[in-house]
Length: 92
Image (tube, rainbow, N blue to C red; front, side, top):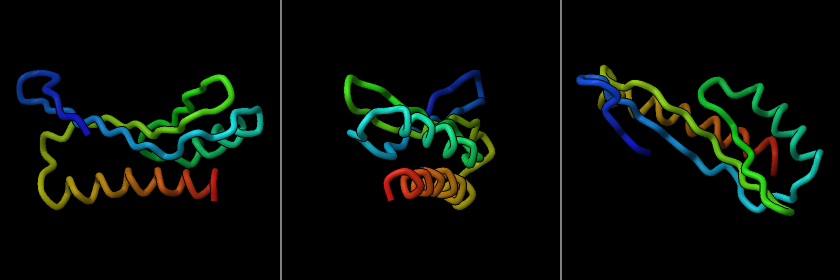
């Protein structure tokens, strides 16, 4: 997680979650990732392709100026849970 100031008084949180790594790359994986990405409500699911394998990450950025403490923690847990759901759909 990174926090940066977009403008004075506007903090943005950027969260990147590794969902899976070294997945065998192929058309079936690409199609499965596209289908799984449709179920993501917060953030974007990205497939990082290499020669024969790929990593999958969930990335989400949001302004959090009014979120702190418990509300911020709950929101982050919702985002992370989506990464877990994506992993379960793709790798079991």
